[in-house]
Amino acid sequence: MRESKFYFKTRKEVSKEEVAVSACLLIRANFIEKLTSGVYNFLPLGFKVIKKIEGIVRDEMEAIGGQEILMALLNPKSNWKQTNRWDTFKALFKVQSRYGQWFALAPTHEEIITPMVKNFIFSYKDLPLYLFHISDKFRDEPRSKSGILRGKEFIMKDLYSFHTDEKDLEKYYEKVKKAYKRVFKRCGLKAFVVEASGGSFSRFSHEFQVITPAGEDLFYYCSSCKFCRNKEIAENIKKCPECGHTVEMLKGSEVGNIFKLKDKYSNAFDLKFRDKDGKNKNVMMGCYGIGISRLLGVIAEANYDKDGMIWPEEVAPFIYHLLSLSSGDAKMNKIIKKQADLFYTKMLEKGIEVLYDDREDVSNGEKLVDADLLGLPYRIVVSEKTIKNNKFELRERRNRKVKLIKLSDFDKTVKSK
Ligand code: ATP
Ligand code: MG
Image 1: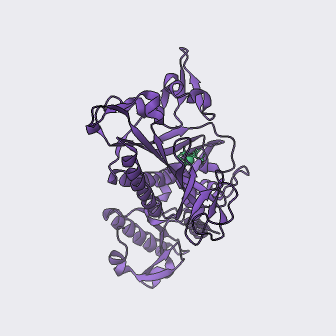
Image 2 (image 1 turned 120 degrees about the vertical axis):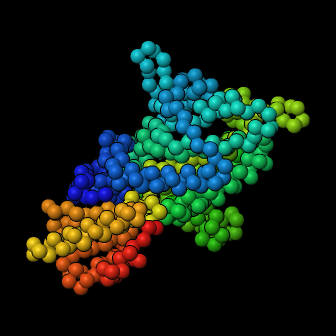
């Protein structure tokens, strides 16, 4: 992508309403734009990151047998009445059709997927079944200061699993836990697995928490045995219940949550299967969420310095940021531009993800500042100084290490990742 053709200019100022570091950085760098409180548009750079996160999640969900579906967001009231959540789910957005019917804008999909699979699950032979879905969710959240970390409209991945018995659910739950760890690691994050309230059907669920000052959760952490438990559910813990070591309190943002639903929803929708012994039994269920758009914010929150963001490679919108810096000398300018153009063409041919700052109406200083703000993993600079030495500059954003490399070594240095 050529920046001269890119319509989204970085900003110096962000509205004072935005206090979360991630929201400020993502808005300044034009990854996202706020439409209204809790509602954001994703601009080309931000949407690229979202698609990369989705790609990782999709990969890992398919690796544990998940099949992707896309469920409706406009939900009939009757589905939500059936579980009583039409009246008890406080954050449910309710909309009325001009013909009088009421709908819910889906905040989660148990009410849709459970009756849906009744059409496919009859006997134990139809189980287990794993279905997942990546799409918008709507929740009428209270006004928050967390920017994109807490939206009224946000993107979630939700996986639902269906089993013959609790043992099978238990086994799959552990598999999902491992898959989640891989997802967050690939996103460049360290996620803590935290015990949290299990609702009325299990003792605990598990949350995946990433440490950040913008987070809304507090949890106990034992540095000795790695025990973690959410403060919300726990009595005042001073000593680790596992090993007796003193615990500390950490602040995090929940990027994922896994839950054993058991037969809560199969009961509500009469989802049964015929078992080997000929008896009809309730299907056992699990549900597993990941906050895709929250992750965009959390990754920014966990990877920045005074100059801007620092994207982990696997989720970076582009891997390379190629900059051609101008010179006062017209002839030299032409040479610089020609060299940078050549690099750009080569990179495109090799399928390397590159953003090319070829803008002519912007100062060199601004280009460098913008590049640090955007925080792509590698910056390549072609300037008068490098050209005079027959070289180009390669700089790693994370550690700011600069290398001057011979022009003729470009092909063997700059490779597709
Ligand atoms: P929270 O405790 O943060 O309100 P939750 O427990 O209600 O979240 P879940 O229903 O478990 O959320 O949803 C699965 C995942 O979706 C969460 O782990 C989180 O990453 C993400 N998520 C939930 N609510 C929001 C929101 N309002 N904005 C952005 N992401 C969200
Ligand atoms: Mg949760």
